[in-house]
Image (tube, rainbow, N blue to C red; front, side, top):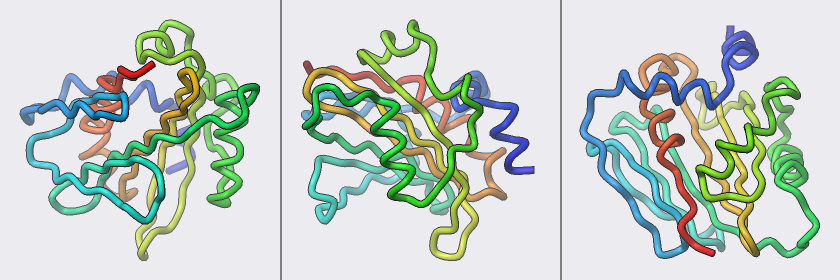
Length: 175
């Protein structure tokens, strides 16, 4: 069922579910050049061990999270797709999205403030939970922004609207 979920519905399709979200949304504007909206009852955390600017918002029960990481783009020729493929390889996951859904439409890339983008979805086990994880890489100038949407499989119907709204609101504000 999980593969069917991602096979039929792209991560951007989850954005369409965002209209069903009724919780109050607040805005996070980050000095590292991005902003997005998040539910007012989700908690904020940072992970200093990652070595790059990052922030994560998690649901109160811990079954869903939306995290953003900002990396320097050391190889100017590297595309968002190549960065995504490297990330998936490091995670040991295979992209569950069909090839025609990996690169978002140009209008959506530009609306997010990016020059290039690629998306992936993997299923993984984290701390004993089967997770669906969506990874979006957005390239702008000398940086790339990766946002990660994670949800426990059994709670995807509950949290997909929130994660979709967060993804839809994500914007690169830096140069």
